[in-house]
Image (cartoon, rainbow, N blue to C red; front, side):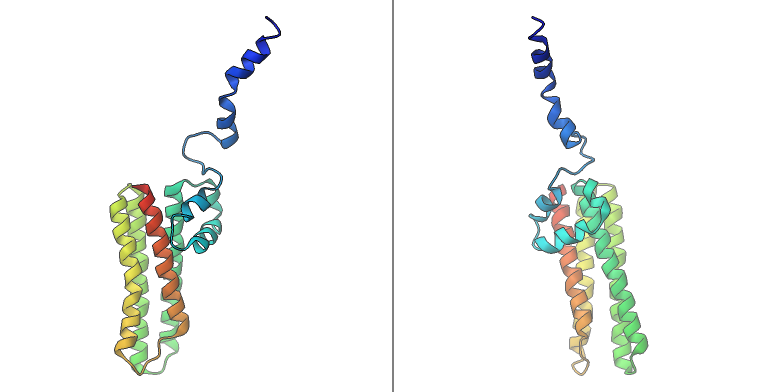
Length: 182
């Protein structure tokens, strides 16, 4: 009987090993590969993985945490692009170009604000409102492109076009991650 006791103890403790190896099931810690699994559900997998991995908090984030990180990355893009457009406006000499670039800077600031509202909604688990705000943020930069189209003599700066595309992709990733939440 004494020789069977260690074996019985082992059998009783065996179900606990997977929990201790994976860090438990509290939902607070991301399972290995959660970033890849989550990003696999997005349109821009490579951008999603590289963006989320760029934030050190992503290693311990759950899906809601990953959506927060994705939104914060989009906020950073919108903030930087607003400043970039404002700097272009400051250096421009053509009055029409200055007006359009200032309007672009404002639209990116509006996008940043909408993204901030999405974080507020996400924090209260109002995923539908978070989705709506991120969707709005993705649309604001389109106004900038439209303003340049309405002024055919003005060239849409390539760097601004790239930043617009980046924000749209970041917002798409955020939307697709939010969709996973409910």
